[in-house]
Length: 425
Image (cartoon, rainbow, N blue to C red; front, side, top):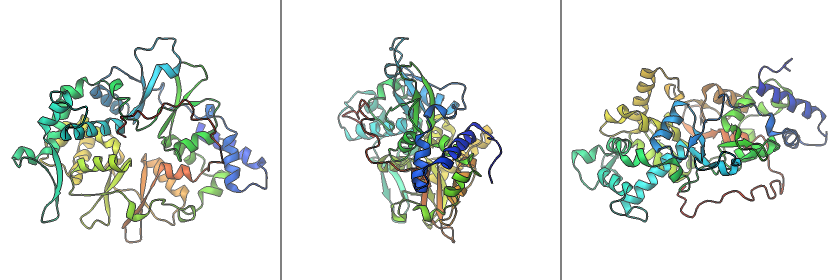
């Protein structure tokens, strides 16, 4: 069923793809035709962010202020503006990176680990070493009953509540309040700062957001001095949802997940956490495995009761009530506490709902519509008994839309700032 006119800016892009699809060389395969269509549309055509302007973080903002800005504006990342750059500086000199909840959480955990282990950069008397000294060195152990608990060197009552103490001490520390976001931008590079130019193509954008694992892409003018737009994986999937009904989309979107090789990850490789494990372990696993979220499994370890993503660390950093009411914050306790917090604050969030699932026989269109309507970044694949057997992310979906031609990027990555030698992520 073809629509008479675009219902949104995203749907207008879909119509442009449709026009290109109809005149594409007939000998091309459907995959090659899609590549060709997206190669002919410039990034400048992508709808602007829903915000009136791109939210920026000043390089002299503290970690606490940065978390507050991201949380208040309901965004996961923002470009860091160098306050020392002159007004007439180009965008390359004006911005020093992109900060994400993920990056802040990973940096804090890595710094605490380093200080607890007495490694370089955590000399006695340093702010991070003093902070960890107050927190205690924490580890995870499994008791005779099989329950995983958080412990420290001491078995005091205070040690038993180390998970709550960790965040309570952290968020009240001068270290957290005084460390500038500009100071940590060179310590981790969760998302490399790589900008698209307005003349770059949709194909370039889609490949960077999928195969090259970028989560967001700033868009700049050649020779410009500001970021014109930020394109995220979520905004691309929303664009796809707005294209439902167009012939080009239906020819691809009606394919079953199993036909497209989804889920990509094998069941035994799925990173997950049990409901009675400390929530701190969830964030550590995300750091260790390089994933943005994981399912919380019930006592049978077969069914997911919830999902925790890296952005959910914001609740431990901005809502003290969540951890102050729990001696040990298990993953299940965390989900319950956050839901209560969101209900009290009258805030809409995917965390208020149950786990969103799909089956291998569902179409990719079904999954796109679920992800877009629920505003989530991953959906879990279950069998007929409801057992979790896989996950599909936004990146997975985009990766099935296009493929990278041989030597496509050429020297595109020349000049991109490399990972710092002391990078932790």
